Amino acid sequence: MAATETLLRVSNYDLDATLDSGQAFHWEPDNGSWVGVIGRHGVRLTRTCDGIRAATAGPVAGWQWLRDYLQTDTDLDAVLKTFPDDAPMRDAVAACRGLRVLRQDPWECLASFILSSTKQIVQIRQIIALLCERFGEPLVGAAAIWERRRRAGQQHHNEPGYSPAGRQRSQASISLPDGETSGTLSQGNHLSHSFPSPEKIASLTDPDLRACKMGFRAPYLLAAAQKVAGGELDLEGLRRLPLAAARGELTALRGVGGKIADCVLLFAYGFDGAFPVDVWVARALRELYFPRRRVGDQRLRHFAATHFGPHAGYAQQYLFHYMRTKMK
DNA sequence: GTCCAGGACCTAG
DNA sequence: CTAGGTCATGGA
Image (cartoon, rainbow, N blue to C red):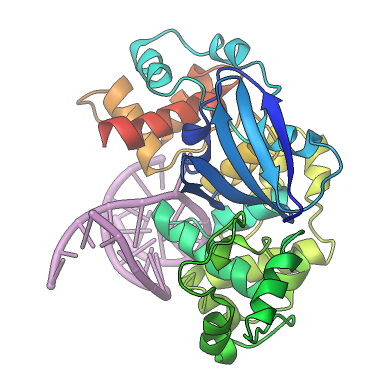
């Protein structure tokens, strides 16, 4: 394996909380490390005493892309200092100090959250895994893995646009023999392909997508992919817009309301003022800030938009993870 | 079998 | 403005 390694020196970084807090869905724990996909790279991350050890399956030119993704250069203490000084926030921060907000690819983030509506996180991962293994590109450095499979006398069907009809045979043919992990970065096939490009998804059909278990979200994803691939929506251009304008561009997409738009603005663009309110955060706000009071949806959103300061989205992520892990 | 999930949308009051 | 139904799927 032509692996490349480095050590990202960083303190105050909770890798577990960061990669398992419902921001990104292309990561899995593996023997004390995390294995995942960033762009076309398979990546293994391991927390050490002085930082994060990173390894990729193929050669890379520098590591700035990984520092950007993980936000290791963010001054976390400066962010935490802007949080409101109240009991709920103190408890939430104490529960997962070191949690970071990632900086993901806009298309992957938008598509992932279009798929997230009324789904449990474990199911979102499953849908995205299917989407990637069927329609994504093999990762950089994965050629050695494919060669090993080929020499084992197994066929595989890697051509673009293969039909769902060939799925069963294809899946069976590319699975490794029992017990072989071969020191590869990922054991499962679902972590061996990139997230499909907007152009790729735009070329698919509704049944192709529904076969990935995404149900009524399929037409939403397809329409979004077509707008991005056709240049009608410029995702890179959103970086230069004010928060409200960027939000308007995203919510113009069918299937993208305020919550999903805020997730994308926060997790992909770094708009820290975006404050996604899902069922968990709504529950957290009601229980922690308005105990046994009847608070309307409108007032709750107003509170969220005004109470948490310039890094409100960051505060939201602490509340979300706190609620989901500690308070059940 | 029932309830619910990092929702959005449509309609009716 | 809020309340309720609908969409598709599968964990718990």
